[in-house]
Image (cartoon, rainbow, N blue to C red; front, side, top):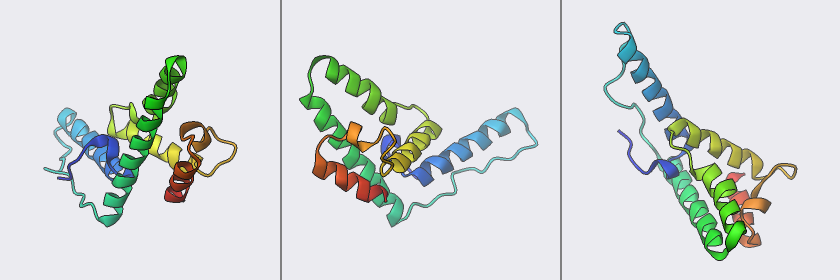
Length: 130
């Protein structure tokens, strides 16, 4: 079975885990449903690279968070870090990843201009999401 820290898993792995555990949950309630004995997912280089992008993005956000003070720090933790990395479910994390990918290059969205103040880091993130 694929393993790792859920916060940094690729969207495809998070989606596969969501589907797997949903099926396992259904199988525990209905004996006619047979759940597989393990997750049928083998991550490749693309998933590994995507995971590294999520690690770097998280580090960027934590670095910015550490530079803030008072209510700015509290707000950033709640609105940005808590929103994108605070989910406790595979499904929730996958949904937040989709938002980050879609909003990365949408000038009308609450996008990276609000999450990543450093221009170089923000442009790196946008290119990574393209």
